Image (cartoon, rainbow, N blue to C red; front, top):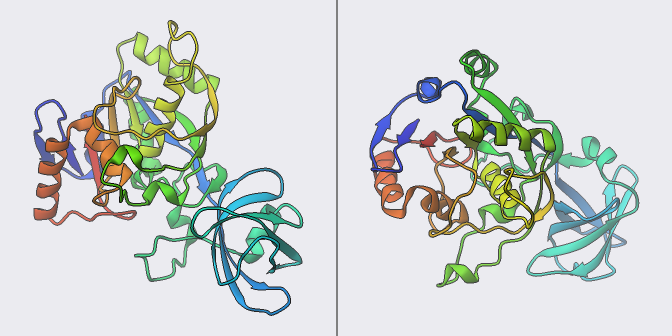
Length: 314
């Protein structure tokens, strides 16, 4: 675990089990308890039988999903057989390979039979234990990818943290693959970031407000948690009593210059160049501090990406 002081750029190299050394009683750790669904479906065209791949991204309603579709001729009206008695039809061609898909009935009950966990493309070996790509607190199904900063936590570590008087709370953000899409525009403000559904409950809002009132820190576990907290804080309404509950879609794109309203520290992994995630952590810690810390991480052979090492920015 690389520990970055965002005020002066100071860096320490520790092990993730040392995280309690950087926490204090009264702090609040906020986790994203979304659960990865087996969102990759291999289907066949009707009636030709040609192979098609569907990757579910965002649930629109009971039977309609936005999905990435791999396969030729997937225009509006095309039907596919998804297996297990389930059919699907393309309702609308969206941008690129994205399609609006309507299933013949709710897809969720069929996913255990026909779905595959959509592992990142740089993971080539099949996971024999699919729970390795879930956090230990994963609860609400809906993500196409895991909130990977949380993969570092174990039951034993959480027990130790609770014993210190550090509180925990949960939000939900269903992670879509657009989170990881590179920014190709010369002006980053022109990058289109697609919406992701998120929710901050009244219970979590109360815990955040109580923590801030007592002088504790709100520590976000993962960039998806950061987006949820800051999305809630940016909603219109009376903020005199603190953050309010929020449920809905967010398109919040955090770039350097953004003024954080809730998050005091964050735990994250190491991100790809030109990614929205790298821009988010640069907004939080400062671009020069992040670049210098990443240079040290490379020199120290830190692992990047989903199953990589962690970074605490405080």
